[in-house]
Length: 93
Image (tube, rainbow, N blue to C red; front, side, top):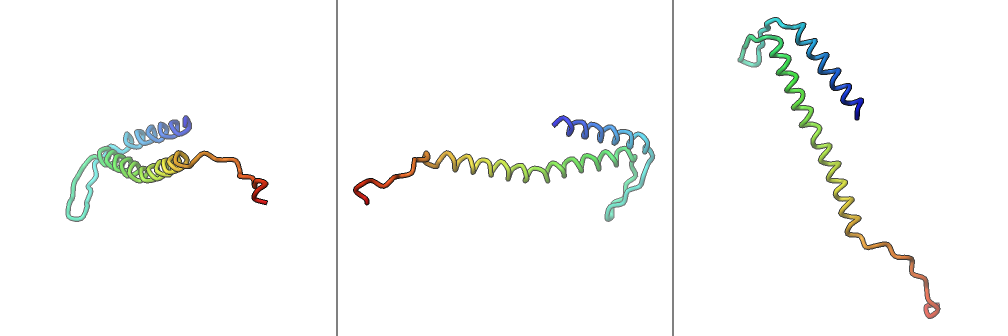
């Protein structure tokens, strides 16, 4: 888990360097909308959208995994305790 935190912190630092080096203004056109904004704001918006999308795409996987674990747990709780095998008695021979 520690390596994951290190990678995330490294990516955040690299992103901050990227933002600091791209402080100019840009014109953005989306469909019929045009806006002029700082690249810093544009990159920050793209970064936040990426975080939200990553979070939303990651949630169904975690939910399925936890639901599967819950089903397995419920199955084990409802099964009767294992019994030793029944041996035939003398009268059954």
